[in-house]
Length: 359
Image (cartoon, rainbow, N blue to C red; front, side):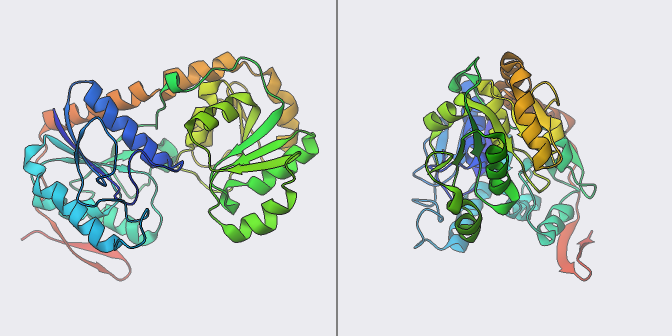
């Protein structure tokens, strides 16, 4: 199968930071290539991949502030669609912009929704719903406005994570540092549970970090090493008693959650978004309603079988399962040969609905 993968051109692949999407896209591409498919990756030219690489930008626009993001994205996406006829399927991992080209080509395009950040974005997805092949990253993230071809969870390569059969003596927060992800709650829980806490991840909200996190960082009870690479992630996750994932928003997917399971470490999380879908309460983690319940969970989490956590990561969230699920979807789409809708997007009007023309 000839597959064209359109990645974001904001950053190189694999990402230098801990971007969940970048790591997943790199894993997908390498998985397609490993199974003998002819794959072209559209990404920044400094990306590293086993696929054929087509890079119109020397570096990602977020990696070099001198690069105009609008120009970079326009040329990047155009390059993919100018070559669309050479592929059996296009795989859009670059949000909604590629949808605007999709009626101009006959090659089917599968679009993964990694999270919709605004109502205006949703309007675009709705406007192409009649011809798009949407993939949700969790059932919890499916929107009633859209039709989906599949739900395919993120996957990790278990071989890249070290199983640790014995629980560690610290708690871990591993995520972007933002009010939504609950680092301040992790600090409270660790203090009340009388266990040290490690906070790892990029600072996304500097004011929040300054006011709610940094005053508690003392290098002993609370340490904050900042962003970490894969080897550090593996060691931190495997050495923890539990991962604290006390989010306050409906998270589409939590990659650190399944990475923790891959090392055998159970997760204490709030039951929002995809968390009840990813975790089996009382088996691979504990779902808690507030900080007090989380403190109680810390005392109970040692009773969970870390081997069960590892096995769950392998069977439900392995990278092989993710890659095979995408390939099965491609085969299903190509076999169906569904005719394309002749409609076209004309406008985003008030009160915010797309209108279609059929002539």
